Length: 296
Image (tube, rainbow, N blue to C red; front, side, top):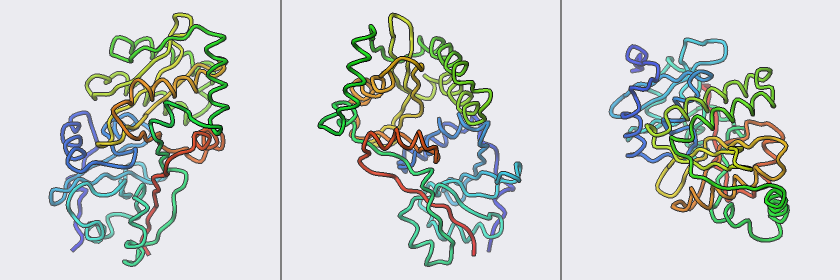
């Protein structure tokens, strides 16, 4: 019998951090969206609801035209419950699903669900050693950009701690002023998410790195553990007009902050051509594929 889960659903809040983090500890995620940091930091542009069913955690979002109607399952159920059983249990209380793992496609299709690949939200998975060493001819351009940056500027890496949060926020304000974030809803949403992550940096057990150029903070990266072998890089920012600074931040972050991990998930490209080109230029080890699902 389909159940009305929304009697007990609630909007995700800071009070849910311990519950969600414990579920992810017991059922380690692979997709970049499944950290409390991601779910919470982006809640202004993507509100998330949650509920529990038979010791399984479920997330929901709403369609673009149904802001207060959380009728889309967001990501796979977190727990022991069977995926198809959960979807059938939800019945008419949902209309679709997003950010489901691509490996579930065949089984869902056999049970009558409509499947569509979601390339724009596929995660880029890299070997940390590749980003740290930039080996071989294929990375020659990256190494040259970094060399020019170091020749033209006095750069120093610094671990990102709570003491640097105010400087990072100030840098992000300046970055947004140069990039005219106010004209771009996507950049506005990212700005809010970065502020949320930095404001809860210690509480969320995040880690990161920053680069000072001629003593002024000009770049930073923020990440956290995703699972036993993999970190996720939530945000990476470098001030424009400093040639090679972005490549240097990427490399130094891998060397210093990611040394305990084999892989780093650097999230999706959202279908943005320039972002896709940049992520592909680092030659990912693999893509973490995702699908959308619909009801027949």
